[in-house]
Amino acid sequence: MRYNMMTMALSTLGLALYSGCVASAPDQGSAGTADPAPAVDQSIDANLVLRVDVEPGHTVSFYEPSPGRLYLAESMQPGQQFALHDRQAVDAIAAFTQLRPEAAVPAALQAAYDRARSMPSTPVALASHTFGGGQPADAQVQAQTPGVISQALTSSSSAANFVNNDGGCNWAPDFSFCRVSWGGGFFATATSDTGLCIVDHFAGNGVTIQITNDSAVTATFQAAGTIVQYGLGTPGGNNTRRIDVLNASGDSFHVGCRWGF
Image (cartoon, rainbow, N blue to C red):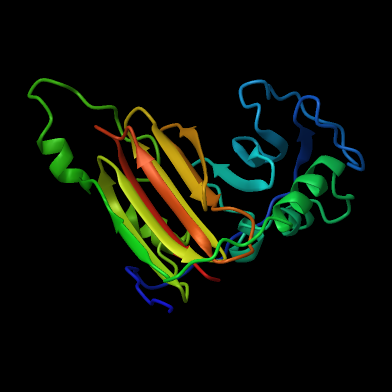
């Protein structure tokens, strides 16, 4: 069963592509890369398989929190544009080929991808979708204690920019859902073979992003003033693919997800 839901504004703008260098995770190796590795501190994330620097402040990171559970995240600053779109934003090999078309796929990334593609599909009796959590950002600000000053806006607080430039409320056939100028938390989940969510965190102290792909759950921190699109696991079987925006009290963001593209 497929679902068609969408909350979106009209008009789109073209997105530009950038090229960058490649850095591999510690002890993982990156055979076949053509460019020298940039000086990047990767010790903060032991699950990192590979990171591609697109431009200053703009990176694509590939993570494998457990064997066979590969996902990627493209993080950028306000004023930049995503380099990956649709299938490229969820499929690790398609993403790397788009970013570095002249380079061989690094061995560590190829091995992680092969493990992900060989994972069995989890039988799902009934397709499902659900969403919720949080409240409009304006209501959250009004509820703050008098005399407490919240952090100034650090990213694009414009909902139109999120919708028109970042594709935050784009449609997809299985399920689509977005919230603009939101705060306090969020979750959305659907049964599908693909999933992609974009979070524009424009005010606050940072949130925890929890990604669920079938039984695999992993969490990462997203700082204020960043826009990140998260691939909810390597494309494959119809699994439960979910995102949670946690620890979001006092934080404001736009968020949009789509499944089955």
